[in-house]
Image 1 (cartoon, rainbow, N blue to C red):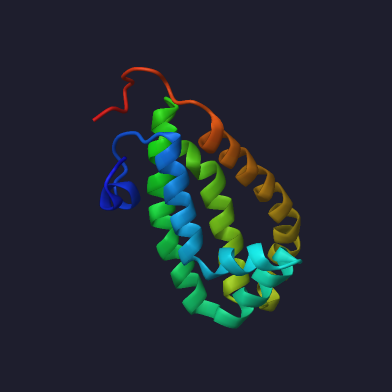
Image 2 (cartoon, rainbow, N blue to C red):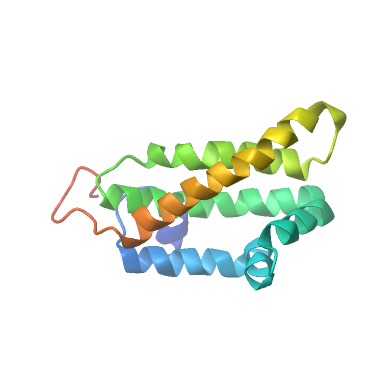
Length: 148
């Protein structure tokens, strides 16, 4: 298995499913949003409440966790023979949604928040697809163009 620094901070190379799951569980463990949402009977409401309560500090923490998550997912995509840029299909819209929630309920973002609630379902489906694809599909056998 990859060393922790390479696992969470490097975008080169490949990782298998076991390293991916270990890294993902570690990131969920240090994310208060993930931890409390898992324990809640209403995860969406719990995350929304934590988001409003933490404000910019929560946004900063979430953005700090996005970097190691992007590194982890990129290397797993590489193992599947795909570009890490495919991860932008999930990260960019999720980041936009997170920013609208963390910055508050300003009148100028009312329309964005209305669409963000609809989009949350779509991003949840995309997240589930990423989880299944990255967590359960076997990587390419033998070398591929992403080997270092």
